[in-house]
Image (cartoon, rainbow, N blue to C red):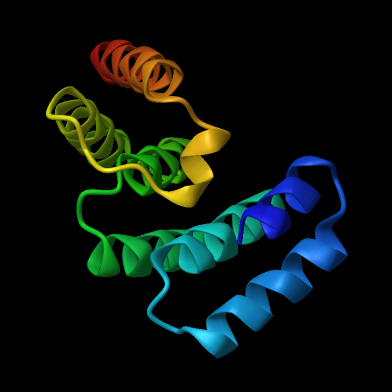
Length: 130
């Protein structure tokens, strides 16, 4: 899963997709594989599929601040600001409570994710008030 993320981060979508599919075939209950599936779908502009994948990741790992952050990002892009705010707020709460790290946390240190969530939450609030 981490290797798939590294490929995706490096702009190598095909090997990332292949590894993500393999991970899901080996373990369909792996929340990080669903998270990666959501990241790929988001990059390709398939927002509904992205939301569904992030929700599956959260179903399997409700305390995933990373999945909540990414789901919030997709909601924000789709204009669903209240839902986005809720996800960012919950991610912040989880991070402040010391939510368990996932293998992908290497790429998303808790402090950086907390900061990103806070900024995204504030941006959604401001946009909703405007």
